[in-house]
Image 1 (tube, rainbow over the protein chains, first blue to last red):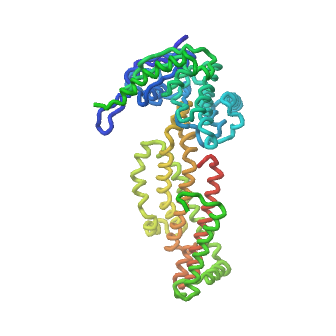
Image 2 (image 1 turned 90 degrees about the vertical axis):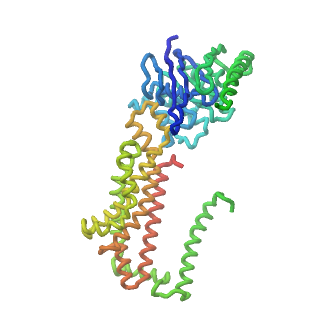
Image 3 (image 1 turned 60 degrees about the vertical axis):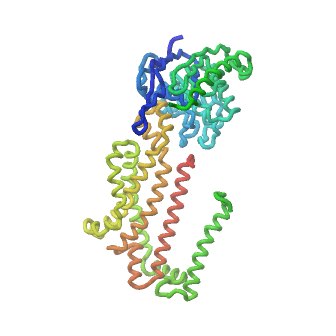
Length: 263
Length: 256
């Protein structure tokens, strides 16, 4: 498999608050994402995983290092890197279908073609019948479905997800995981998915990247060998549990380290 | 009654009307009961009769029309210039840094204090009245719009960037639609204030309008006409406010 995304020694330091010392959020991190791969990044909160994702999206700039997508340096946000945020970021003044078409209109795509693509993704995320609804009329899960459809409709080279199901209840979260996984299984997109939920990280991914506590860096990089299509029952199998136990241990060590009082 | 508990629709209307009724009742007791001298306060019936006289004999409808025209003229002028400037300031921080300190200063300049100057510059014609309202409304509109646009949710802007929007796309397709309901709400508030400026402008150096009628009536000690004029302004304000609210709700069904 060829490399789609290269993260090359990317680090991020935030300027100190009120003359205080600068904070290192992310130590030099190197990561290669293969074409059509599904990678999850998991780590304790504040470990810089979201910062890393925002740098890939072009919403934040690295203090040092480079991000390249298909060999081209990332200098700012662009339609080739679709993003789904943890907060609900649907445009409240647009209906579901117009939200999904947002990027297509920005590309000045002919309306008929845009409508066709949007309808396809409405079906994909199971929102048929809700096309004319405004975001305020939708549940959190439905808003995130729309956000996923909106990102996918743009046909990005890579899909970035920043704890997209973090604000959802457990049952909805499971359903959304299955939905996203089934979309990936049928469309084979390149996906970089940030989460703090270990089970979610394993269930979704081909590769789980574990990050250390702040300042973050890659601690371990584990392949998930569970086959596809993946059914939710895989979560109760022995190999899944073994992997979960291993990663839980690794992250627990980091959480403990982060909980220690700073000198 | 518990804090923040909502009140039913019909009960809300009844309660709202009840205070009007109570107000008129108190006024009637004070005047018909002889507690207040007629010279200082006319009773409600005299007020209505005087109002009728104004319309029937003194062509008051024309004064009302001209006052409405002045308010709308000055207000639309202020909005037409103030909204775009406010949007530019909210969207682009250097523009804001350039104008904001001056606008913040100018906003505290009382529009009524400009009247003598404006009479000097523009005479006592329509232009002077429009300018009073313009000065009173423009700076308020600019600041309120700038704050609204500047407060656009950053995550929506970021989402639009990741969907391929460029700078002009962000302004046209995120900042504007996102700020539109609050801008409309700001305009509704400022229109209310514009009504106070127009009356002040008409109290000095005017030969027509509701404010002019009020000064005339003062000279004749006709408190009935004065009160009628004041209440009429209140009614017009209420009607335009309700209209504005309805229009906003119809224009922005996604809001709230």
